[in-house]
Amino acid sequence: METGLKEKVIMHALWPERRHQYNSTPLKHLLFYASVFDLLEEGIVHVENKRIKCSNLETGDPVLDDVVSVLLPYSGKKLSRMAYQLVPKKSTAIYRKQKEFMAGHNLLEKENISILMWKVGNSYRVRNYDILKPDIKKLERVLVYGRKPDRETLLFAVLAREGKLFKNIFRNYEFRKNAERNYKILKNSNLIAGDHAISSLIKSYKQSLNVQYVSGTTSTT
Image (cartoon, rainbow, N blue to C red; front, side):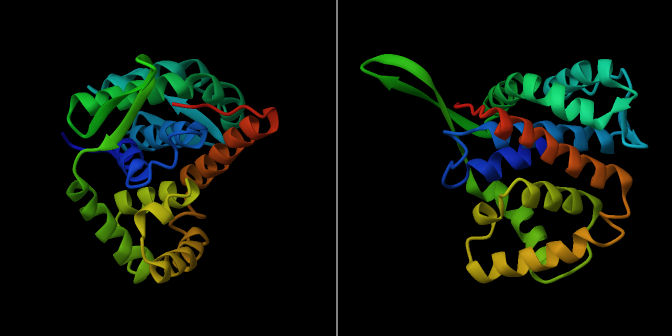
């Protein structure tokens, strides 16, 4: 199975500490925006004048198709509407479906959580660490050593940093320190600051999280 940005953020978030397992709200929102980035790259989603536009097209991916279906009523509306209304309501269902989808393709292993013989939920873990190594190497070249990114690595770097995944990805403190420094440079460059779609979606992601934090709403897997 070819992994897109939405698969990458899930696997890197769950490996190795599974730190999002008990408060999964940030990861749910990150996954939704990773899906939007995937649709952006497929030409199905566009961002113009801080408004999101979505075409009614099938992708062949059941999770992305679900994201398209929930975005369509918001097509032409401001991104703030999506952040404040759509994402808090729909991200949980998208997140659950994505984990099941990945488990069905052997990217994640599903484990039952039971208390006194009663099933109370599910836990997921990455099946094979080796599948994460190519992304880590690409991010190291860009964020640790300051090389110019390709488009996919750029978008993943944005999602990883804004989703606070650097601790999971870079196990070395010096690597994390360099990555933070180089990301700030990258964020202020034309590659991000000069790209209306990327910069607008970053702002929208942060707005969606603020809704949860203000309301005091958190979720568990």
